Image 1: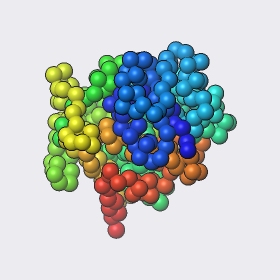
Image 2 (image 1 turned 90 degrees about the vertical axis):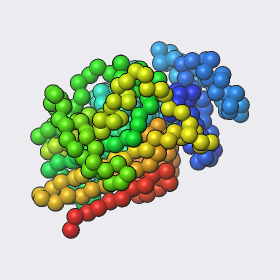
Image 3 (image 1 turned 120 degrees about the horizontal axis):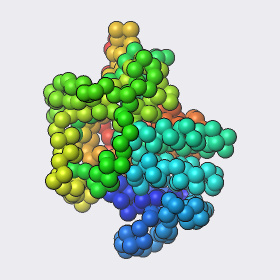
Length: 336
């Protein structure tokens, strides 16, 4: 039975990841920087190992990963944690996955660790979560057998966004310019960001949106050829997350999920034709757990198609991956 080190195990998303690992028959090892929070989590999971580890202590990180089969990093801001945890994974020869939404953190890992990971035959997948991974997989599925696209448009709608403390801290920490893909290259998001009305399937319907790219731009830039890639988010969600008085998420039932609903709508255009992939579900933090654990299982059983610091759609059969997630409803529409 595989032991999986989970860094940031006591965080909001980390707790969903712990539950999903247990559901899939894997053994989480609880890790993080805060000893008191680890001890509190251990009261809920008394049979699981726990190890405190600071990102400033390679020895403590090595201890956390010792004997594990992989590491999942749930501890943001990832501009701070991704590099030292991936360094530890490389020393241990283990797969690395995280739930990063920050474009800069993904691009930094690509720049500094891709060659080393490929040389060591290690799979490292940053942004294997709602932000980043889900849109990357949907775009890859929609692209299908097209070798390239003229444009990819991604739109996210949330009926509300009650941010975690980690989301707020990350927003304060992440001051790097947001990027899109323009003329086939990464480029700064135009200022002021573009706005547009986007028609989502029910129940969202027409939503006012604004250009707001997340880590999916960084992951798609790794493996998809498209002249343009743009991402949008509805204003309802942004108003919530930007309001300092919006409370954190709360469980709506015994599952621990909030009542929040989401939709991700991806349009891929080529030579006058369009393909569309659409996904919807409940709770953007909770759905990150089945996404990242499904990726982990596929790495461990040999279904990963790439090595190095790679993107989800570069590594897995995107349509098969999405169809394997019971927490997710998704559809693919191919014009013609």
